[in-house]
Image (cartoon, rainbow, N blue to C red; front, side, top):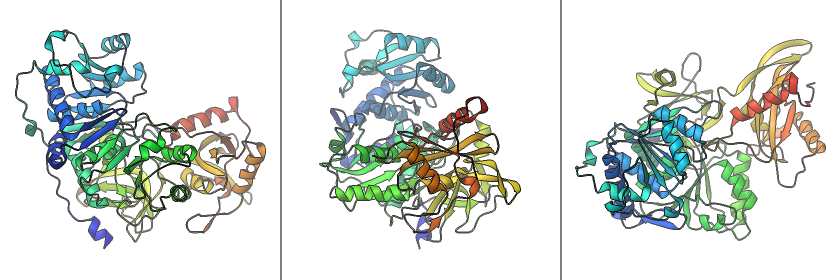
Length: 579
């Protein structure tokens, strides 16, 4: 029954995000759309802001297919820039707000942006960017203007310069005398360029069309049964530069008439203020760690809160810890919904929201999409309950990687006459249609093991070891990567975040090594699991936090580099000999 429901057809109109935004929110035009810092803006005012900016962009020569780059935190003005660009058929790429000048110039040249919008860059920084890129115009939102929700329209004060203030876009728009017909731009237009997570390598730039974004919204709405309007609030804790932050957490909620709190000033002191009145919370496991460590006893949250976990999925143990935390704060019915997705699937492939939550899973495939689990080598479809590479078909699947046709071709595969995105992650599709993530294809290495005097090479799957270690009572979270090993070729190294109050001592390390040698109970099923001899980590490093990518996922690439640097012959740290 569940699978039949999931496979039903969902019609996706060929419409731009801007036009969908206006049409769907006519009933809510006077409701608040976004809140940030000390400002709130209604749907009507946000539309007006986008119209003004779009005219200014046209006056600067922006045309259909151009790419506008934006470098700022999750501010209201960033969303307005996207809607403005979308209104005239241009695409937007959000850069990481913490990018260095070198990174900014590299990305601007890579996507050949002619217009660059930034937050509070100095005159010297803007000149450097102009001199080292092909950018024609740089628009700066200065810090004193951050809470201004309108523009300066006085043309007499507008200087003729390649460097513009954001507030002067109003005056610039007055010079444009043409007519803009937003209905000329349909679902086929490029809308958003986002970055892959970069978990295990360099991020690629994914091109998403209007139709990709609209399809994701319709698929998610059909899957989660979220109703439009209702003056409900959502909290967005993920950066605009990744699709989960901008599309899933931002655009999807705006298309449903919600108010989105952008929470750019979130800290431990105002955590309770931001959670108050929130119905939908879009975060990552990193936010859960922040919440559990910093929440006060007087934390206030709604009992009907739904937490959408993106980036990495929450472990079963962390799921129950979080449920217990909310129950202790008077919210026993809070829903913790794991999901999964890639930039290539417009951030969402599966969701548990709107379904019975099964914490060992990442929910069910999106209604309207099709999925297949295949053998990596033969491309033959796997049976239910068998692990294989996750493939997904639907109108939410990305159009292409930017300027990378070879990678695009490699990422797509024809199955039963239809084109699928072929991920690098192993999933299991269960009989109940729920999906379990086994691990990424690239998260393994080869080691030498000896049994009864016979040596052989074995694959070591890092995620399997990681899932085991996370069940140990003193472990808060961990990451397992490859390390150099003179005798064994490679061996597992684990970075461990200990639970609060557990000391980082030799005794603690010895306790963990002892645990590695024995079976441990699964917190959900109570089944016993034990690491194989060659899966037992030979080195442990205690850390305060695990490094994260811009998408909130554990940065395995950075950890592997660190591990290899520490365990090479020239700089070898202390490791435990494998028995």
